[in-house]
Length: 391
Image (cartoon, rainbow, N blue to C red; front, top):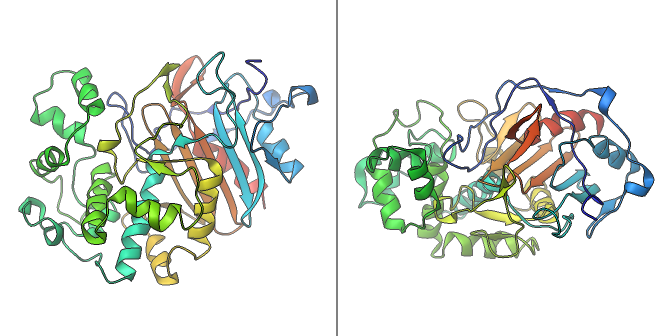
């Protein structure tokens, strides 16, 4: 029954797009905002699957037939593999899985399937920092030297700079390693990215790299900002970053499948149909969380519903810095969103503050075939199509 639950999103792209998240060396791991790519829906190829083709897996929810019909209209040769949840006013309208976990003969994906969510992790880190600020344990005005006096090179960087992507730091560790270790090929950078590293090595590597600009003067998306914030959270809270999230968020909001460091049980990731590896040590705080769509729904409901932060702290989290970046979220008009990308995963979550539509898309494949080419999945384009129709 390989094809029993394969469905897809028909996305006719005007051009290629780079998603935010943590990824492999050959492709840019994260860009803060999507390129000027527009989704064009070709109505001639939008089809309705026959009733006998509709088979739902564990966790399937559909309280609204119109929403299900809308999501299913994207069935086409792309063979989407992952899970989707749509909610309005924090009521789930639709949740289901598509495709297979690991190719022919593997189990079908369902709404309960657990994925690495890439840079969606950043909003957990940002919320943790703001929660600790509420408790008077830190301030966004604090400098890095307050927490790490043994590494004074970047003493002028504040937590505000880090959380708003204005620090001047390099994008990823592998970018620095490529220069510092004298790599001559991207294969060497790939091997670095997949090798476990001790925290001290990463600190030394990070602080050996000069800043790209004066802190606070520009915007540049960087995973290293949130990796450093995870170390600040640990230093201030007296527990590891993983423990902090588990105790203060996952347990409190009953996120039963949520975890960190890519635990066993998450579905395997894929790049161009090949199974991939991931290295959580490079992405603590910036891309190390895993969950299913239901747990991300619980998190979004708590975060945007006022259960995680005070009203003042939530306003801080959703206020733009330079450009459209807030604190672990991107703000464009009335929509708050972030996407994520690892070697073999794609993720997207958006919340429309006007019509209260929440969309979560998780995939265990980084690439899909468009017009004969493998390209990164532009999940946020689905939101641009769905949100106006779910008023």
